[in-house]
Length: 237
Image (tube, rainbow, N blue to C red):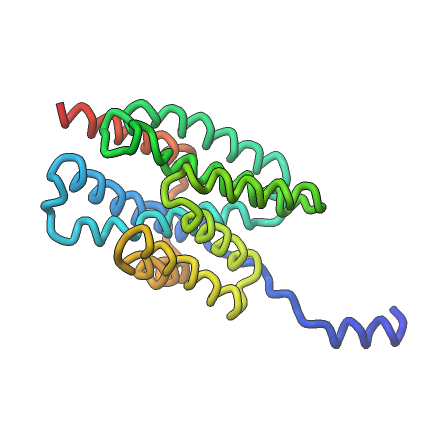
């Protein structure tokens, strides 16, 4: 390396290393999100929103699941490679599997709008894959998909923005990206009507720093989503 190259390298800002969470920490985040989701959905569909603080607790589910997904997709070589294709494929399959029970539970406009949260994660994964692959055409397509599909998925563009901000932070945990993540999660308040989603950030931060020995359950969380909606529907009968 020449003296000039060494000087340029020394003067260039260092790129932060991606987050490195233990498998147990990631699984813990997903388990807390799952509990919050089940409490929220049970309160909504079986108790007509009568359980105290259940709605508020449920606001933690989306940002926690979003962080877990974003962390997985932010790992080097994942989103733009075959692993990214597999994630997208699973989201298509399990999102479609969840749709009948999701629609049967009702409380949707025109019987279908918005599409369930698996569709939100699917759109986010597709957009991030295009962005990571790079190129003007792919990034333009990512912007079009973000704007168009964001209008028909649960949590809309705010949910997509939260996943994207979490992905960006997991790839490069800088103060600027942390501020962007806080702002993106705060924007969910426009959907939720409150700012309880922000409580997910300290929860995720705490769990990510604890070395927990929780086994990874493969596709359990994918299977759980359509199955728990079907169970809730049967209970409403």
